[in-house]
Length: 283
Image (tube, rainbow, N blue to C red; front, side, top):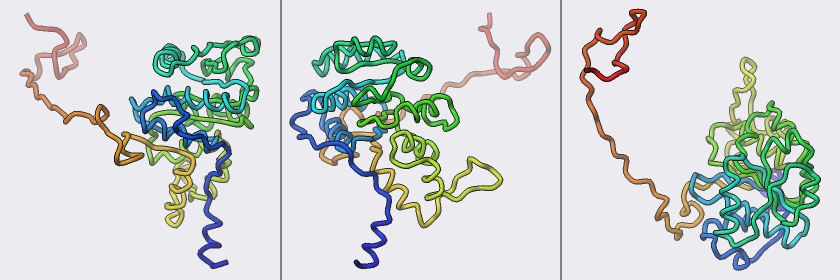
């Protein structure tokens, strides 16, 4: 074995634990970038979709769950904030043409459910008796709740979701310099233990525990490792240059200046403190 080949064996890359699926078998309602993302997530088994607002994370999560239970059996659970429950039920029926996901509150309702895709909110899993290990596939919508390592949600979910065969997290693209957030996602997905990731990639600051600095010689390997289990998408052409960004491009910024004429010293509150502007319209 050449020395370069030996070094390559030391590079950490997330292993695929899912299955191959022909993209033509995925729902025809998916756009090309959505189809690519779902195919990649199913093949990986434990993956993260970090996509900007409007790219269709909702239907990607539903399709991920649908295809997994269709081929592997069992049921799938999508955990979400209550505010987006209607969006998931609507998109499943009106866009994908699937049966409406059933909202469940406890394990009794899980076992009695007649649909294969179930939805619930974070509190029901964290504080209730819902057992994620019952499911073949799970997806966390707005998964940024996991970013805080010491939070009750993260610690509870880390243990409760351990061993789930297919796990997906979906949220808007995280800040690239928030290393701990990325590490926490990897820990939840069982890609790498958080402590191991910290030791492998980062030098510690003895004066400030949360101040992480990538080892200069590990920077390339760190992002290569992250890209093996997380997909960052801000527009469709990020995945393929031939994909159209029409409808996703933001219009040029339109700055409009408005000048408010004021007389300094005229505006003050009842205690005599001067304010910059009047809080009420003048006579």
